[in-house]
Length: 196
Image (cartoon, rainbow, N blue to C red):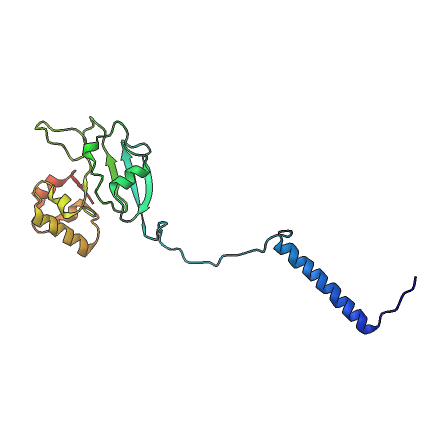
């Protein structure tokens, strides 16, 4: 067998061709799944407030009482009681449906109580008037909902809404005392019927 000695330029070309071949094999293996995928590191970002899948802010509510799965639930900010009850598995057969305002808006940190039939909060009084099963939230109730409270008319209800818009959500029921037209006697009447 005859062999021809390679000249220096031919050796360089052969070496470059071999290096290109090795590089091509490595690249093809990585792209074709033969090798391990490249490591990707996500950049660190500051923690952002919780957001729903639609991009809005998320609130947390506590659903208790006559629902299938009582507990804490994360909901989009402008949710209603119906949304929270649905997330909790819906009303049970024991639920006093007429005592739950499913259309009421909810606020972050609110507890939604679904009363059971025959419970003190869902019972009807001697005169046949239904007792308030879900206390009215001062931080999220509409003027119309506040107007249904004893001793609170449309004017006072609007004052409560205006106070909330100026000072933010109520932190206690006693904060109602700052609203003109609500004194200690009226505040005592509203205890148990309202929550912050």
